[in-house]
Image (cartoon, rainbow, N blue to C red; front, side, top):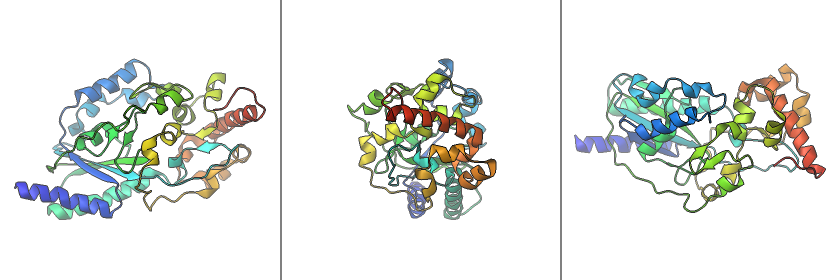
Length: 323
């Protein structure tokens, strides 16, 4: 039985590698009190901003077996989107993950392929649930439990050889898949560049974020119009923010390239604020449909563009503003 179990995990890892996953690991659904404590503290301290979904379904976060009765193993995976990019000075910036087709669709498709292979390897019917940001699952926590990555000071998971430019996805199964676990070291060391150089001071301490101050939150999750202070805070970022990842030495050393399924939409890389502000609803759909940007809608994208245009103008004229 032991030999079979070890071989089972090995065979699944092999298939995952062939499918282009940067990492895969397995963990039993044991209680994670520290992770729940951190999630609860974020809500209690109102660091979640208007992301009220983080306040709900805490029971399922604490016990993923409520998501899949009979759960025995959580399979955690990571796929890289670490592709090179050249940004032009004076143009708005869009987070790298949003310059490609929506990762939910692509990662889910790869997980479906992986699950099909796992079913064949096991040789019987299994009950499973695939999740890609779609369930109240503490993804980073289970990825750490599975030994595929370590959460850095910027609160992002860093995967060996891949860095933090990764998408996570999970398969919950009703079969036990034992495997050797690795405890990864803290890869941040004494580096604290992400903490000291975050322009909005959203990273309040190592591993702790105030999402209401994060540029990604402001440009994506915040639904209302900006207050003057918030408009200035986003600087040049029209959607999302990669600053703490760009600064990270670990990412600069990453050797695993982006998965071949992620094709950069070149027309979005250095799109101007003027073009965004002139878009009609049909033009917005034509340009952004199928990307993560499409979900915030044209109104909010134009809100962001107006703020960025003002920040860029202030930066050019030498007045305090921008990043």
